[in-house]
Length: 321
Image (cartoon, rainbow, N blue to C red; front, side, top):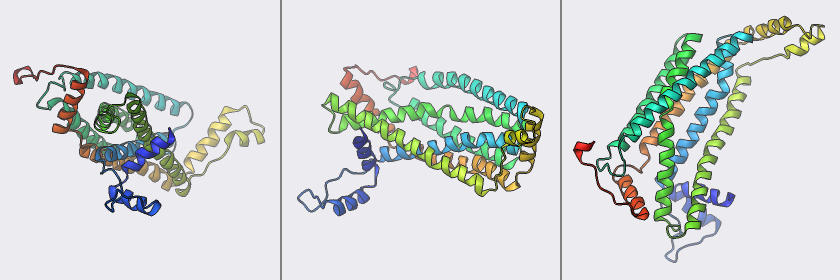
C-alpha cells in the first residue's frame, strides 16, 4: 500500500513542519484554530534515519570494494579473483562465528523477566561500542595506513566483528517500534488494521534504506568520473588488432588501464571507504543511541505485550542473573 507507506513517512516529519504543510495545503483545523496532527514520533524518526544511513553505508562499501582491489591495490586477472574470494570467505566465516557468539550473549537473559533491563542495555551498548570501534578501525586501515592485501584481509575480518551484532539491534528496534505503535494507536483493537499498519511501517523503513542506497550509489559512481576515472574496452581493442582470443593481450591492456589511473581516483576510493563510510557509521550509532524505546519505556512495552498474550510474568531475582 503506497499511500500507507507515504503516510508513515509523513508522520516521521517534524511536527511543526507537518502543521505548516497541512495549513498551506488545506487549512484544516481541529476547531480550536490548530491543525490536527500527531505529535513527533521520535522512535520512528530515529529508526528511519538509522535505516537511511545504514543503506548509505552499505552501498558505499559494496560499490567501492571492487575499485579498491583493482585500482588501489592494483590487482587484476587471477590475482584479483583470489583476493576477492579469499576476503569474502574470511568475512563470511567471521560473521557466522560471531553470530553464534552474539546469539548466546543476547539470549542468555529473559528480557521480559529481567526487571533491571540488563539484557537490553547489553544489546544497546555492545552495538554502539562495536559500531564506533569499527568506524575508527576502518578509517585507520583504509584511509590512514598504506594499502595492502594483508590490511584488506584484516579489515574484512574486523569489520564483520564490528557489524554483525547490529542486525540483532536493528531487528529488535523495528519490532519494538511496530509493537508500541500498534498497541497504543488507533489499530490497537483491530487485528486487520494492525497487520496493515505493521506492513506500512516495515515498508517505510525498507524504503528509507533503499532510497539511500539508490541516491548514494549514483553519487559514488558520479564521483568516480569527477576523480578522473578512465577506462578502455580491452577486448574490443585486442579484436581490432587481430588478437581477440589472446588473453595475454587483454591482461596487458587492462594492466595499462590500472597503472594509468590518476592518483586522485585512488584517493577518492579510499576517501569513500575510509572516511565517508565511517561517518555514516557515526550517524548510525547516534540514532541508535537516541532511539527512545529503552529502559522504563521498553519495560512497559514488554509488560503490555505479555498481558495481551495472557502471560504470567515473574521477575528474575538478582541471584538468577
